[in-house]
Length: 178
Image (cartoon, rainbow, N blue to C red; front, side):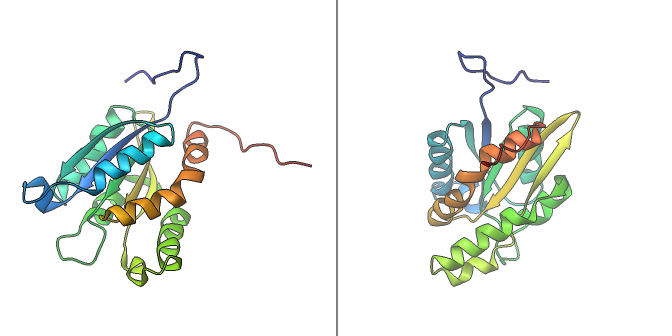
């Protein structure tokens, strides 16, 4: 089991793996554009990140998620493979890895895209949930495969991601005023 990184003050640092799901980018047809955006946004949110790992859709997504879980990352955020294309299998592969789903995250991601004037956001089949193995827990979130979809997704995730990770670690809810 990997040791969780800590800050100089002894606080545990949150970590995230970025996984780009693209048959064409993984084959070198074109460069990954959404993964680097996602990795940078996570770093700006205070996460130590690894990736993007660029993989084709299907079983390689499960391999990448298992790797991230085994290496002890707090979160694995995917970009791509969530649409209606016959080759988009990321939600199905992700679902098989999850101990339980957190549907509110996926619902909020789709709603935010629609509210921003992207009617096709509701076609995303992305999931969110918690994967667990050998005492390790990891939040998994599927984002769309465009850099705009990543930016919109991080606008939703940014304010809740740290709290979700803390909850997975057994943390309590912050005290309510009054």
